[in-house]
Image (cartoon, rainbow, N blue to C red):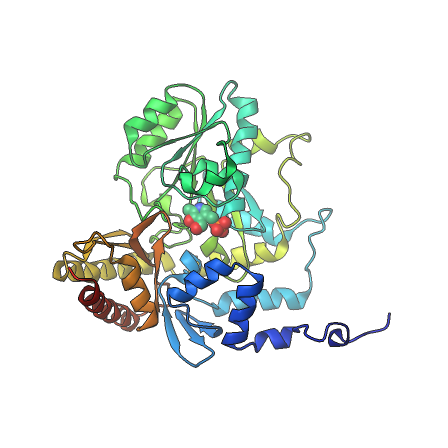
Length: 449
Ligand SMILES: Cc1ncc(COP(=O)(O)O)c(C=O)c1O
């Protein structure tokens, strides 16, 4: 076949090299024209400051040469540091050795090995689905799994119970599971078979489970988009008992809280003698190198769903159990374990919470609460006399003036999230804290008390 240089056919075609060298103005114009225009405009208003030339550890450099401190990690993805060398090198090694195929007739050694490793970390949950997408696909996987299993083992049960103000992704099933009307308002009528209870309200869970028709109770181990909501300490252990009593599966969404973010490899490991029937993961387990998600389940649950020839094809996908994702997830897990990332985040997280609480004491009308666990931190802001919240202006000043990136919660705009990563040092904490204090002073001076 004759080779024709692409620019001869499409003169304005941007090659890989062109794309890598795009300047800020051109890239912004292309994004405004071809991608999500309104979202891009909002990001620009919030201080989105250009194209990333390089990113490493907890820093980003834009094409103008400015250094930024990443305190949001693409919303909880970069727990192990951006461009973590161990992960990147393993993926390069993987590509160089050329086993890159997803042929379903071959056995997949990296996903099998990753799944084996996962079962060492969570011994009661020994079956893994590795998805090629993100958290939404992971949760779709769990929803489907419990429904198919229930069809066989929990006759007469038809409902999934979720929590209000949760976030599980934006596919059709996950917006229905998540109990936030805003994200499912476009669909006309809600899908049948989903109900919700307030997060952290045990009596409400029991009232629903006692009706006898609930297949599974789904919840985030700590609500992320809902505003970093940590439930009462006895909530999940008691929910576990209720699920056992009423023969209901317990499924935890660890997409945001998992992968060491809260100071445990899986956030539910905070609780002693406790395990869900399944949990979902994404974000942090891929180290931000590739999209990747999955679901870890007990053998009983998984086999009830897929343990027969007629059901084993019910939830397949082209990129499921793909080797490169397996290689990456395996490498992340290895890095987490070998570097004791969870313990580091537990202790440094406690220090940072303490420092933020000092700021809260100093500015009690501005910072109302500091909450979360480990490096999953939510700062709740107050409002001025006109009822205008300080959250977004402080977030924008922090990024625009101090080049520290944080992010408000999409389901609670009074909360700003701080998600440092494993590589963040105490010096970086000072950058964040001094920028935050200056932003507080500036915003209060503008908006008034
Ligand atoms: C708890 C939780 N579940 C699911 C998702 C969806 O993940 P994704 O955006 O990768 O589809 C998110 C994303 O923020 C999340 O926080």
